[in-house]
Amino acid sequence: MPGLYIGSTSGYSGKNTITVGLGQAFQKAGLRIGYMKPVGAMPVETPAGLGDEDALFVRAALGLDEDPAHTPAAMTPVVVTHDFKMDAFEGRLAGIHDGGLMAQVQAAYQTLATGRDLMLVAGSGSMYSGKYSGLDAVSLVKTLGTGNGTFRALVIDRFEKELNYDLLLMLGEQLEGQLAGVVLNDVPPAFLEEVAGHLAPFLESRGIPVLGILPRDPLMGSITVGDLAARLGGKVISAHHRTDRVVSQFLIGTMQVENFMLHFRKKKNAAVIVGGDRSDVQLVALEGDCPCLVLTGNLYPNDVILTRSEVLETSIIIVREDTFTVAKKMENLLTRHKMRDAVKVRQGAELVAKYLRLDALRASLGI
Image (tube, rainbow, N blue to C red; front, side, top):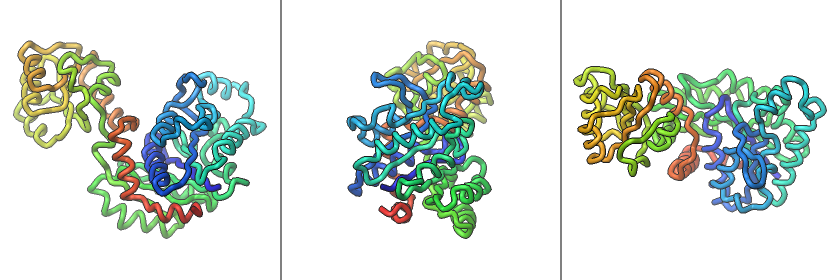
């Protein structure tokens, strides 16, 4: 029974997106899919016990939440809590040196694999995360590939200023023939030609199959206004019924109004971060149909701004921090926001179906 480990060169690289997209594509092709995330780094209590937030999300997206075999404990046999790490660091954690933790993963894998045509195994963090406990991805791929039929790894590398080609070459050597290929994800339009015309052929020449180049998609890096307010620890004070609007970028409104207008016209779906006392910039942003205003310094707007925000159905979020701090938080959120919305699930599945070489991947897995 074939298995595919979906890992990445760093955290927040698109593992959930690719896993769900692949799972749905294989299900449409008539394959019976099993899923697990051996090591969970996002603990969450469920009525059935401790699980991993990402694993529960993917289970639901793949329609496996009613499957009695896919319990939280089976999908994620090792959940990393603070106590887990402290026990590991201080030598109290059982199963590290005698292979007990890896045995738990193997047993869960065998249980979930029963009656399946393909097992999807999702990673946590990077391919080297979990090395301290003996459960890094390289070790997992080698272990699960022993006695379990065809088992391969798909490694995602997300574009962040550049791609990690050196690391991909190292992984190709370390996985010793078990690397099905790599996916180059979130590539900006300006770099697509270079990646497709130069980097991908180079990797292929070194024995690293490039199974997909996914262009940057604004929707996948977006967040709703309501979620943004919660993540920033802010309070929505107007147009509460429009917190479902999407934010895909932001603009800092500390400049003069004329300069702000010039930059604002070039931005689409951009939240405007501005001091609560800058009513001039606030009004321009509202009239320009921005998805929301984020007012910093815990300063409330005047009545004119509040009235216009209600009329124009543009939410206003009040936060305590200064503009610079909020902008840094926004940058991290838009880079690392988890795929949770149904619209993102659909979009991710479409990207996978369009840009991944599914036939080549199936050939590598023998399915």
